[in-house]
Image (cartoon, rainbow, N blue to C red; front, side, top):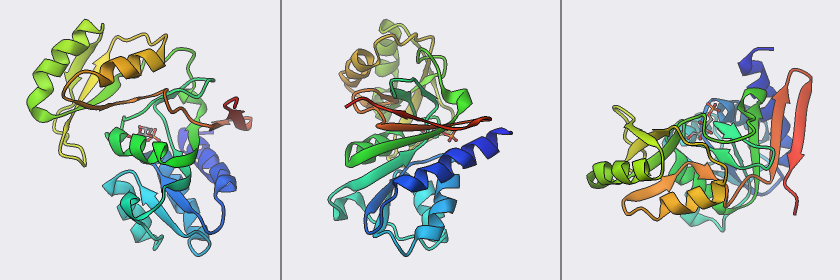
Length: 221
Ligand code: 5RP
């Protein structure tokens, strides 16, 4: 099975977590695009969606799926999003698509987070994928020097401005043994808007598509 077939399988499995008459949080990326396409068949049964990026909002609207601002809701029943890396404990690195800040907000504002991914995203230790950090533009150099002190090698993502008008530093060379501690530490650097570690609020469910089928991992409560 190629990567797209696996992404589609994980995305379609997530429909089982979408309840009628609820607000659905929708992430960003190629795996989520398959979820959006599948969600079109449910457009009349859900109340609305909240999108984590302008790109996802556009794809949803193009498919005539209703989109609301997060401010106009009381949060989402479920949030469905992909990951760049995920562990069996359901901590993730996200932000490869640059949407990490809105993703973290919508995830936090949702009662259940369902991560959809193909098997290549499962890792024992986070950090092989460069950790995205969204920064306020005037703080770029300062934040980069602070990230070196944390042990990383930050590199400016060229030609990218986030939906919030900020920049992304991609940090290589981190072996993330304690993702909650590192997420908290990087958040303390003035000028950092968000970092791509999703460990303080991990996923509740991981739907991991493998050639043998979609495996479900649940976070212990
Ligand atoms: C975007 C994200 C995506 O969820 C992550 O990059 C995975 O994307 P894809 O499904 O295309 O592999 O965090 O900011």
